[in-house]
Image (tube, rainbow, N blue to C red; front, side, top):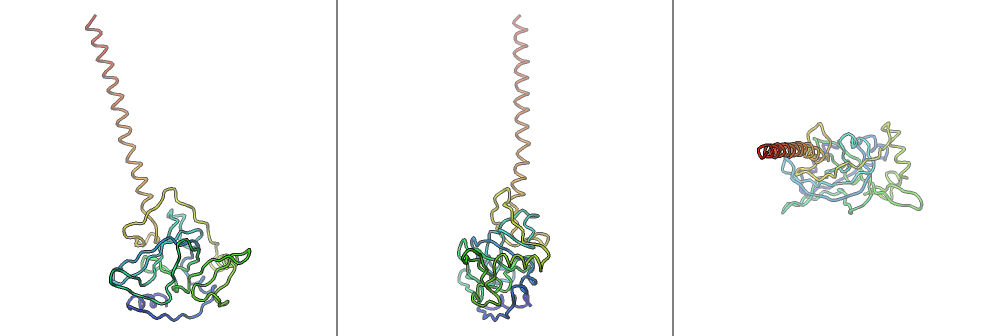
Length: 238
């Protein structure tokens, strides 16, 4: 259902979205991945079929199903249909809007090697402070207790019960990552958002070892030849 709705949205210049109510537990079960983090920036791109999509980049604090530890990433690119690119402006009702630094919980779907925000704004929750507790509030229906206003600790417990494992803390990569020229578009064997900067950095360091060693031996050889030359001149002088 999600995939059919997604490509319907992408084919229309303006989309009117109707949501079927799902509980938080149902969305957890349906999601391919879950991300807890904060919004960094966005970028509008044109897809292979000439439709436009908005890439939302998030810093991950915790995640489930994204394999951040395996691929050494702490940022993720999540796509949403629509956006403005030049003179083309595609508006989709229900697509969430974020403020830089805003803390959120996202339900993720993986479609054709890209991560998409599941159920648009309905699958997006903002993390708010309520007294001494933190709660997640649905982006579209913040006052509807059927789909919103869940304690953050309770939400994490539900993820563990439904998915069979808890949200794991995302470790910061050893090397700082930068977006690729075509971010979020990777081979099927790698998750969205994985950056090749780490491998490139390692390659540069490995390649730099060879010239350093060669320079050392060149200097050493010249020193030996200089000593032999001075010794020979001393012998001739005698």
